[in-house]
Amino acid sequence: MQIVVFGATGRLGQRAVDEALRRGHQVTAAVRDAGRLPRRDGQLTVAVADVTDPQSVAQAVAGHDAVISVVGRDAEHPEFLSVAVGALLIGLSQAGVLRLVIGGGAGSLLVAPDTRLVDTPDFHDEWKPEALAQADALELLHGAETDVDWTYVSPGALLAPGERRGGYRTGGDDLLRDETGQSHISMEDFAIALVDEAELPRYVRQRFTAAY
Image (cartoon, rainbow, N blue to C red; front, side):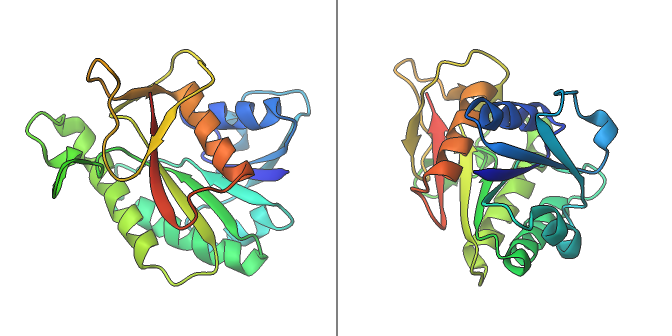
């Protein structure tokens, strides 16, 4: 497959690129600053693109099979993620690339009926802006009239660099916990979930969660 990764310079983005390359896919890193990308000795194509500009998105993704976006919140522009999602939907549609997988947040997952993780008393204050921005982006996807087959993937409550176990469990809108009550997944295994969904769509126009 030919896959574009937006947000490829971030910690999760680099792992998504590595996972797609590991599987033999042709990967294009769509970035604002090509100088921030680690060298991969010609394995990777680089496209300088603005994820908030539909025309720039369309130019970067043309001719590809699927797009993975793992861009994060812009602290100075709270609306950034929603603007990026809107531009991705328009740009992909213009380019005729109709498969989009978005690596999102866990804050909008439910821990009880009508109670999101982000709304619980113990949710860290410093995480809330990102979580709320991701929730807004997911809401935009649900309301979008588009021909793009999108999927939004939420991780467990804790997403951090770690071990590549090679597996994960999936769920819907409810927070997944392991047998000890913890909700977590490594970035390495979350990247596997993103590339798995790009390769073989199972949750088209839905959100699912991937965790241990």
